[in-house]
Length: 338
Image 1 (cartoon, rainbow, N blue to C red):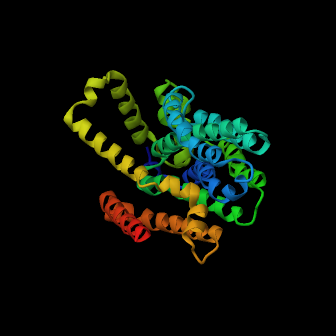
Image 2 (tube, rainbow, N blue to C red):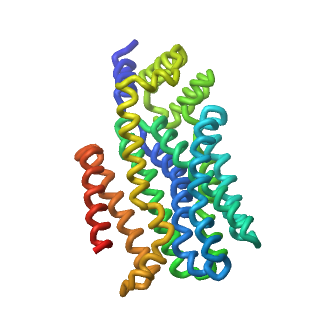
């Protein structure tokens, strides 16, 4: 090989992976997270108008039943991502989201409306699992942390989206149509997204896995070292059988319990319930601001806090951010009580 040939090969091998395709891919799939957020944020602005259609008990079920659907959706998503693939599961989930909105828009009785929220919950549960998994598998290590943060950023953006339009759209059925728009955009963008190379490799589709990884990293980037590591990891996973007894080993059980505890107490702080009922909470509090305006302020603060957290994740560390955010939440709740 000539010196020029060696230099060219070295340049290709040493170049960094392209980022534009990764940015577009992550933006496309996190439109699902934005759709997730609209399902959460819809209740707060829609609740005053829904009070004319549903009684207090029906409203309670309509508001909260999405959480039961989400629990089931997480389990279903865990099964489907290894059968349909990550992209396939996302495409299946959009059917649930659109079906949920359709039942809310066209439903003429409580059963139809409740079914719409349950189906929306299935979408929420599946989305919360499959999108972070997909991003973690397709992102290159140098930008994986930043791209992974995009999921939560788009969730809170979706909540804010629902609050903003809820302030000007007083008819709750029309608001449901507006909230369904991100899901339509998500559906279209998914047609341009590649399946996860990790999933393709697990299914023995090495050629497709190589092509998907090359597309994600750019045509001038040598994927061979990364592809070899992926293949070795997959072979190692295939050669091992994991049992429930393995989960009881201290070095596995301890971090699992810690993660579950963090998630449990986060949800036990009533953050989701507050998101659903912000307009009602502010109305009952006697705030000088109009309730929808107050909800929008909270939505903006969620987006701002997430934007601040993104660059701090790798600098301050996850633990410090968790402690800091929990302390702020505790102070805020104590102020509400007093």
